[in-house]
Image 1 (cartoon, rainbow, N blue to C red):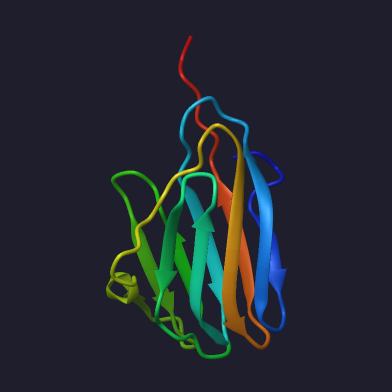
Image 2 (cartoon, rainbow, N blue to C red):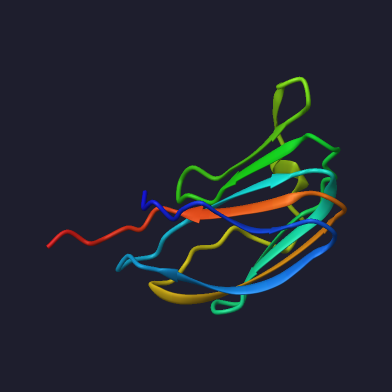
Length: 130
């Protein structure tokens, strides 16, 4: 991974933000997102493709959620304050889906109802072999 990934997209009270994320690879890349509580629900939209992804679960203070949108390896893992990890895939809202970053710029919008949580975002750039 490149040294500037992952990065913090927002923190604090009620995160609502849009930012252009540039996929420096030359093929689609699948993002990973890390949330810390308290907060929820969480929605992230790739405005460039029109695809949206929503988690309906609520995180307590100190809990985390690791979302991996990787092709063939999609996971939503919740870690509670005691360190126990559970599958939260069933908290994905109906009608939403995990998505990819197109090569080049992608306008990403985030909404996270939180009082002190954070959102981290990253991806591994992928390249076609010459």
